[in-house]
Image 1 (cartoon, one colour):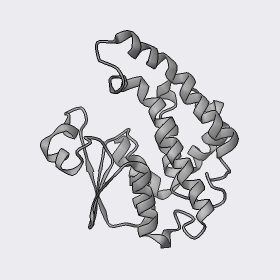
Image 2 (image 1 turned 120 degrees about the vertical axis):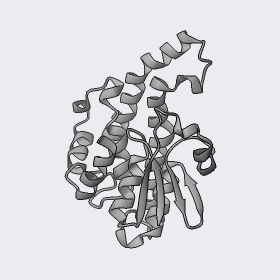
Image 3 (image 1 turned 30 degrees about the vertical axis):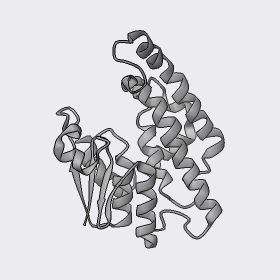
Image 4 (image 1 turned 90 degrees about the vertical axis):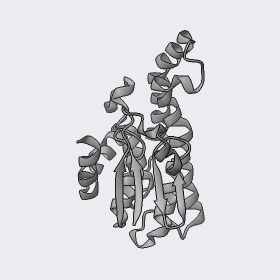
Length: 208
């Protein structure tokens, strides 16, 4: 059995959805960030980074959302969650998820995690980062909307590990001060995602 450590509202939603879609035997373990459980000695033994997601596998612990998503796709090839047999299309999937991780998520994090980049006492710098979030996140989603999204799913006709990841980050748009209606393709994708049985099941844990 796999163990997925997650926190509601975090990017751990993406691998949680992938595990459910793959039909994996797993246990989802909630990490309470409000109680600082991510910094507890017990959790730091699982993931020294003090973040989620963390996936405990028979071979060890994996962290970082893109890596976990690829691992799930490779461990459950019958679920067809990635174009594993096509090196170029698999590279496209990796490129998309890497963009979500390295650009979109980082832009979003400037709203509430400014102290990762500047001292807590530098309130002016933190405020400047927060003001920039609606612009930087919207610019990233404009690129996704216009150039990176194929439709009806991210890579085209077949659902993949890119879809739960996009769904996860698109859920943050309103909190970042952005109207999701600005991006009709992404909004349509979100609507399709919430109709999937696996998504409905997993969201009970994340929205409950």
